[in-house]
Amino acid sequence: MAPRAESASGGGMRRVDSDLSIQSEGEQARSYKDYRYRRSHLIGMINWTHVLGTHVPELMILGILILIGQIIRQVIDQVAPGNLSFETIAIVTVAVKDLIVGFVKSIMEVDANMFSPAVKVTALVLFVAAWIIRMDNPVYLLSFATFKAPDSWKISHAQIIEMMKRQNCFTKESLDFMSRILERSGTGQATAWPPGIVQCLEGKKADRSIETSRKEAEIILFDIVDKALKKAKVHPKEIDVLVINCSLFSPTPSLCAMVASKFGMRSDVSTYNLGGMGCSASLISIDLAKKLLQAKTGFRGGKALVVSTEIITPNLYHGNDKGFLIQNTLFRCGGAAMVLSNSWFDGRRAWYKLLHTIRVQGSEHASYECVFETEDEAGERGVRLSKDIVKVAGKCMEKNLTMLGPLILPITEQLKVVFSLVARFITKFFVKALRSSKSDSMAAKVPVVKPYVPDFKTCIDHFCIHAGGRAVIDGIEKNMKLELFHTEASRMALMNYGNTSSSSIWYELEYIQEHQKSNPLKKGDRILQVAFGSGFKCTSGVWLKL
Image 1 (cartoon, rainbow, N blue to C red):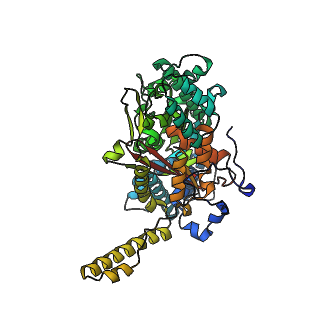
Image 2 (tube, rainbow, N blue to C red):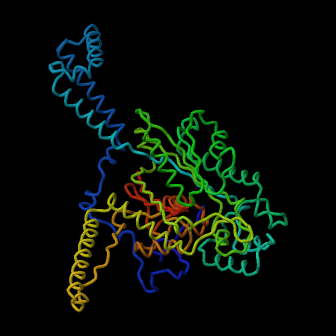
Image 3 (cartoon, rainbow, N blue to C red):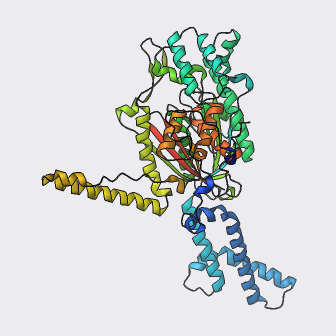
């Protein structure tokens, strides 16, 4: 079990020092209670379609029962008013059957005297409600599960450096560099590495073969899929869509074929194996599953299984280029499996409801080469991280939140953004006009209006920021002006599990759901997941706790 952070009253979670930290020593930490709004303010932010959609099965069944009861009452009043016997019951049954069979046709006829006004009004309300809910087409998260590595996989920082020494390929300068990165990484002293590499600590040669890599994949995938299906109480044959993302390991047969064969899924299950998308791929997989589920027609809906992981065994870099060495210090074994459904009847037992997914793809050359798998000058294969990664990630995230903001921000925050844009346009216009008239002294006196950064804390209760490293978390905390309890889940996931690539946001959600005391999860809370990946991509997803 992951360690719990201290409560807010006890001083909050202990934080590792960072150059990008913005919290001063004497600053008083805020509580999640400081961001509570009056109910009158929150009512305007409620999406009532989501509220009604959660209770739609019960409401529809109740409405249908009322409709049938009204029809039966009308028939009894017409056939045998005040005289109910076995003979009249048989007559009433036949009459009700005839009415229900011709219900749709009869309700549309000009001669509407066949049904009472109460029956027609109830039918109209049911049809309108069904149309509104169908337009919403919700997607629910029934369950998710994360991989918990056995103790034999877990090693300390000192053991990691010793493991690197035993590869007999790294110079002293490279070992010192990795040691410094580890000290500042924010990862803990018991994070998981695959047994094929860890075995070198026992005097054996590291095994990076395809069979050992496949074995690592089987251990992780089978474990998380089995746990997720059991939590959701879903049989493998109920799965209609299977999506698995793994960036750097793509064997033949695929990972999807591995899982489908192990769990005996249906032969018509739709499978998609995503590769090369890096740490942002989990929300891309969620978005793909959402669109595939919503494309399915019929009242029953469908179910999707999404699996996110990264296989470390074949991807240990054996060169001495510093741009490649960072991957050896941050990435760890991990994985997560999620069960999704768009069936109305699953709304009551679901954990979360998916509200929005946003994806931004950078198209510049710098974005494309920011995280790049290639070979170094000595021919050693690895993933090179560019020095521009922080700058590129910042621009990509800014575009993502710009697209997400209008969907979730309250109108007050959106008006502040609009006012800021208008004010900046007007001041720039006056400055340009004054300079063109050679009034530089007057132009210098025009105030500079800074762009307004909207406060996402007004509409988001919990943040799951990809645990790509301590500097990533610190940078987002600073730019979004988040409190310590907002980034607590990300820091704890990084400390307990390291950078598990695309699955890291699910370790964070698990921490919020099961362990966090400084900002406890409640029904109706909104959770924002943000992840970054090669390409360069920034993905975000908003969930509603049911």
